[in-house]
Length: 141
Image (cartoon, rainbow, N blue to C red; front, side):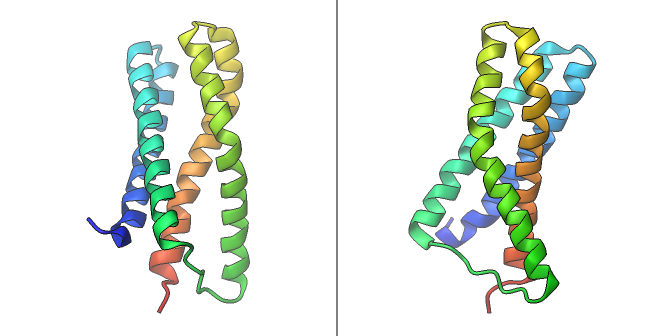
């Protein structure tokens, strides 16, 4: 694996996070707490691996300029901006959600998880969208 493979790996890790988060939500709706816990911990590990890989890639490679023109450029940067802002905000939210679950404060856990889950899903999904737009739909020439 080379540095140039990391964006694809990052998109795969984000995709896995989306699947795990969705399964975790489905499990808790069916009161399957152990399965929910396993999915959410796995999503946390997957997202952490993504973050390490993402930071490593950008430290060694730098940024990749977006090549799209016209309206798609505004769409891309709107997605990127919302993705970036929520990606920064979601980290403390995830920690707080996990702390409340581990302390078995499920009333408080549910209260923040209602916000954490959709934000985390949005960040993971838009991470894949940014990857597709940057590396497949409008790649650097």
